[in-house]
Image 1: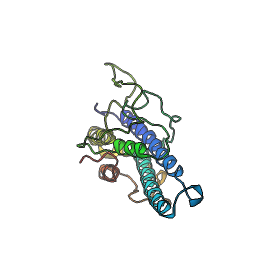
Image 2: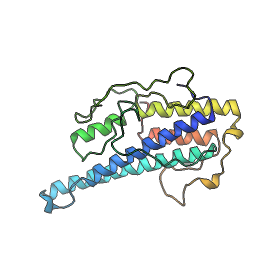
Image 3: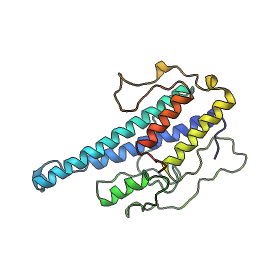
Image 4: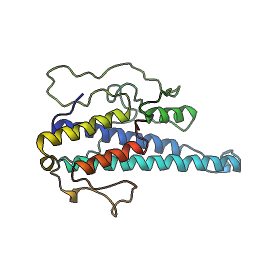
Length: 224
Protein backbone atom coordinates (compact mmCIF):
# COMPACT_ATOMS: atom_id res chain seq x y z
CA UNK A 1 0.00 0.00 0.00
CA UNK A 2 1.03 3.58 -0.63
CA UNK A 3 -0.65 6.69 0.77
CA UNK A 4 -0.80 9.45 -1.85
CA UNK A 5 -3.64 11.73 -0.72
CA UNK A 6 -4.77 13.58 2.41
CA UNK A 7 -8.01 11.56 2.45
CA UNK A 8 -6.12 8.27 2.37
CA UNK A 9 -3.82 9.48 5.15
CA UNK A 10 -6.83 10.50 7.26
CA UNK A 11 -8.58 7.14 6.77
CA UNK A 12 -5.41 5.25 7.74
CA UNK A 13 -5.02 7.43 10.85
CA UNK A 14 -8.65 6.60 11.69
CA UNK A 15 -7.78 2.89 11.62
CA UNK A 16 -4.74 3.56 13.81
CA UNK A 17 -7.00 5.41 16.29
CA UNK A 18 -9.42 2.50 16.44
CA UNK A 19 -6.60 -0.01 16.90
CA UNK A 20 -5.05 2.02 19.74
CA UNK A 21 -8.46 2.41 21.38
CA UNK A 22 -9.06 -1.35 21.21
CA UNK A 23 -5.60 -2.27 22.52
CA UNK A 24 -6.09 0.10 25.45
CA UNK A 25 -9.33 -1.72 26.34
CA UNK A 26 -7.60 -5.12 26.19
CA UNK A 27 -4.93 -4.01 28.67
CA UNK A 28 -7.43 -2.38 31.04
CA UNK A 29 -9.68 -5.46 31.06
CA UNK A 30 -6.72 -7.75 31.82
CA UNK A 31 -5.57 -5.45 34.64
CA UNK A 32 -9.04 -5.26 36.18
CA UNK A 33 -9.34 -9.08 36.10
CA UNK A 34 -6.48 -9.51 38.59
CA UNK A 35 -7.16 -10.29 42.24
CA UNK A 36 -6.78 -7.38 44.67
CA UNK A 37 -6.69 -8.84 48.17
CA UNK A 38 -5.74 -11.95 50.15
CA UNK A 39 -9.47 -12.46 50.78
CA UNK A 40 -9.62 -13.79 47.23
CA UNK A 41 -7.56 -16.85 48.13
CA UNK A 42 -3.98 -15.70 47.53
CA UNK A 43 -0.98 -15.28 49.83
CA UNK A 44 0.60 -11.91 50.69
CA UNK A 45 3.61 -12.80 48.51
CA UNK A 46 1.31 -13.62 45.58
CA UNK A 47 -0.57 -10.36 46.12
CA UNK A 48 2.72 -8.43 45.94
CA UNK A 49 3.53 -10.10 42.61
CA UNK A 50 0.03 -9.47 41.24
CA UNK A 51 0.18 -5.82 42.32
CA UNK A 52 3.41 -5.44 40.33
CA UNK A 53 1.78 -7.03 37.28
CA UNK A 54 -1.22 -4.68 37.55
CA UNK A 55 0.98 -1.58 37.73
CA UNK A 56 2.93 -2.71 34.66
CA UNK A 57 -0.20 -3.44 32.62
CA UNK A 58 -1.81 -0.13 33.61
CA UNK A 59 1.40 1.69 32.64
CA UNK A 60 1.18 0.10 29.19
CA UNK A 61 -2.50 1.07 28.97
CA UNK A 62 -1.38 4.64 29.74
CA UNK A 63 1.03 4.45 26.81
CA UNK A 64 -1.84 3.33 24.58
CA UNK A 65 -3.71 6.46 25.69
CA UNK A 66 -0.67 8.52 24.68
CA UNK A 67 -0.60 6.83 21.27
CA UNK A 68 -4.32 7.47 20.75
CA UNK A 69 -3.85 11.12 21.71
CA UNK A 70 -0.86 11.51 19.36
CA UNK A 71 -2.77 9.97 16.45
CA UNK A 72 -5.67 12.31 17.25
CA UNK A 73 -3.37 15.35 17.29
CA UNK A 74 -1.84 14.25 13.98
CA UNK A 75 -5.30 13.81 12.47
CA UNK A 76 -6.29 17.30 13.63
CA UNK A 77 -2.99 18.80 12.40
CA UNK A 78 -3.66 17.73 8.80
CA UNK A 79 -7.20 19.08 8.76
CA UNK A 80 -9.23 16.14 10.10
CA UNK A 81 -11.39 15.67 13.19
CA UNK A 82 -10.72 13.56 16.25
CA UNK A 83 -11.75 9.95 15.56
CA UNK A 84 -12.76 8.16 18.76
CA UNK A 85 -15.12 5.59 17.25
CA UNK A 86 -14.36 1.89 17.50
CA UNK A 87 -16.32 -1.29 16.85
CA UNK A 88 -17.66 -3.39 19.71
CA UNK A 89 -15.50 -6.10 21.25
CA UNK A 90 -14.62 -8.65 20.01
CA UNK A 91 -13.82 -7.03 16.68
CA UNK A 92 -15.37 -8.97 13.79
CA UNK A 93 -13.24 -10.68 11.16
CA UNK A 94 -12.21 -8.24 8.44
CA UNK A 95 -12.19 -5.17 10.67
CA UNK A 96 -8.43 -5.54 11.15
CA UNK A 97 -5.96 -7.94 9.47
CA UNK A 98 -6.60 -11.57 10.42
CA UNK A 99 -3.61 -11.81 12.80
CA UNK A 100 -5.12 -9.08 15.00
CA UNK A 101 -7.44 -10.99 17.33
CA UNK A 102 -9.13 -8.20 19.30
CA UNK A 103 -11.16 -9.62 22.19
CA UNK A 104 -11.36 -9.04 25.92
CA UNK A 105 -9.69 -11.69 28.06
CA UNK A 106 -8.65 -11.97 31.74
CA UNK A 107 -4.96 -12.00 32.53
CA UNK A 108 -3.21 -15.34 31.94
CA UNK A 109 -0.04 -16.67 30.33
CA UNK A 110 -1.93 -16.96 27.04
CA UNK A 111 -3.11 -13.35 27.33
CA UNK A 112 0.44 -12.23 28.06
CA UNK A 113 1.66 -14.10 24.96
CA UNK A 114 -1.12 -12.39 22.99
CA UNK A 115 0.00 -8.92 24.13
CA UNK A 116 3.62 -9.71 23.21
CA UNK A 117 2.50 -10.98 19.80
CA UNK A 118 0.45 -7.85 19.06
CA UNK A 119 3.31 -5.53 20.05
CA UNK A 120 6.17 -7.64 18.66
CA UNK A 121 9.14 -5.97 16.94
CA UNK A 122 9.38 -6.17 13.18
CA UNK A 123 12.40 -8.49 13.20
CA UNK A 124 11.24 -10.95 15.89
CA UNK A 125 9.34 -14.21 15.40
CA UNK A 126 6.80 -14.47 18.22
CA UNK A 127 4.13 -17.13 18.72
CA UNK A 128 0.54 -16.04 19.27
CA UNK A 129 -1.14 -17.03 22.56
CA UNK A 130 -2.81 -20.44 22.32
CA UNK A 131 -6.27 -19.02 23.09
CA UNK A 132 -6.05 -16.31 20.42
CA UNK A 133 -5.78 -18.10 17.10
CA UNK A 134 -7.72 -16.24 14.37
CA UNK A 135 -11.02 -17.91 13.50
CA UNK A 136 -10.64 -16.93 9.83
CA UNK A 137 -7.60 -16.66 7.57
CA UNK A 138 -8.04 -13.84 5.08
CA UNK A 139 -6.20 -11.04 3.27
CA UNK A 140 -7.61 -7.53 3.07
CA UNK A 141 -6.82 -6.90 -0.58
CA UNK A 142 -8.07 -3.81 -2.41
CA UNK A 143 -9.21 -4.41 -6.02
CA UNK A 144 -7.87 -2.17 -8.77
CA UNK A 145 -9.94 0.95 -9.31
CA UNK A 146 -11.39 1.02 -5.79
CA UNK A 147 -13.00 4.40 -5.10
CA UNK A 148 -12.90 4.40 -1.30
CA UNK A 149 -9.70 4.89 0.72
CA UNK A 150 -8.31 1.71 2.22
CA UNK A 151 -5.82 1.02 5.01
CA UNK A 152 -4.55 -2.20 3.44
CA UNK A 153 -2.91 -5.29 4.89
CA UNK A 154 -0.19 -5.20 7.56
CA UNK A 155 1.30 -7.88 9.78
CA UNK A 156 2.38 -5.72 12.72
CA UNK A 157 1.42 -2.41 14.30
CA UNK A 158 4.88 -1.19 13.28
CA UNK A 159 4.08 -1.77 9.60
CA UNK A 160 0.92 0.33 9.94
CA UNK A 161 2.91 3.22 11.40
CA UNK A 162 5.61 2.87 8.77
CA UNK A 163 2.88 3.24 6.13
CA UNK A 164 1.63 6.37 7.91
CA UNK A 165 5.15 7.80 8.22
CA UNK A 166 5.84 7.30 4.51
CA UNK A 167 2.42 8.79 3.73
CA UNK A 168 3.19 11.92 5.75
CA UNK A 169 6.45 12.40 3.86
CA UNK A 170 4.91 11.70 0.44
CA UNK A 171 1.78 13.82 0.82
CA UNK A 172 3.79 16.65 2.38
CA UNK A 173 6.03 16.67 -0.68
CA UNK A 174 3.04 16.62 -3.05
CA UNK A 175 0.89 19.26 -1.35
CA UNK A 176 3.58 21.25 0.40
CA UNK A 177 4.20 20.99 4.12
CA UNK A 178 2.24 24.15 4.96
CA UNK A 179 -0.78 22.99 2.96
CA UNK A 180 -0.79 19.53 4.57
CA UNK A 181 -0.46 20.78 8.14
CA UNK A 182 -3.35 23.22 8.00
CA UNK A 183 -5.12 22.36 11.25
CA UNK A 184 -5.22 24.68 14.25
CA UNK A 185 -3.02 23.75 17.20
CA UNK A 186 -5.78 25.01 19.52
CA UNK A 187 -7.82 21.92 18.56
CA UNK A 188 -5.11 19.56 19.83
CA UNK A 189 -4.44 18.38 23.36
CA UNK A 190 -1.11 18.29 25.19
CA UNK A 191 0.39 19.28 28.57
CA UNK A 192 -0.64 20.96 30.79
CA UNK A 193 -4.22 19.95 29.82
CA UNK A 194 -3.22 16.28 29.64
CA UNK A 195 -0.01 15.02 31.23
CA UNK A 196 1.09 11.99 29.22
CA UNK A 197 4.75 11.24 28.53
CA UNK A 198 5.62 11.98 24.89
CA UNK A 199 2.38 13.85 24.10
CA UNK A 200 3.10 16.90 21.92
CA UNK A 201 1.37 19.39 19.65
CA UNK A 202 1.89 18.70 15.94
CA UNK A 203 2.32 21.49 13.41
CA UNK A 204 4.75 20.28 10.73
CA UNK A 205 6.42 17.20 9.27
CA UNK A 206 9.18 17.13 11.87
CA UNK A 207 6.77 17.12 14.84
CA UNK A 208 4.57 14.55 13.08
CA UNK A 209 7.51 12.18 12.63
CA UNK A 210 8.52 12.80 16.26
CA UNK A 211 5.05 11.65 17.31
CA UNK A 212 5.30 8.50 15.18
CA UNK A 213 8.75 7.79 16.62
CA UNK A 214 7.39 8.12 20.17
CA UNK A 215 4.70 5.56 19.41
CA UNK A 216 7.04 2.96 17.94
CA UNK A 217 9.86 3.42 20.46
CA UNK A 218 7.46 2.97 23.39
CA UNK A 219 7.02 -0.56 22.09
CA UNK A 220 4.10 -0.20 19.70
CA UNK A 221 5.52 -2.24 16.86
CA UNK A 222 9.17 -1.26 17.21
CA UNK A 223 11.20 -2.21 14.15
CA UNK A 224 13.97 -3.97 16.09
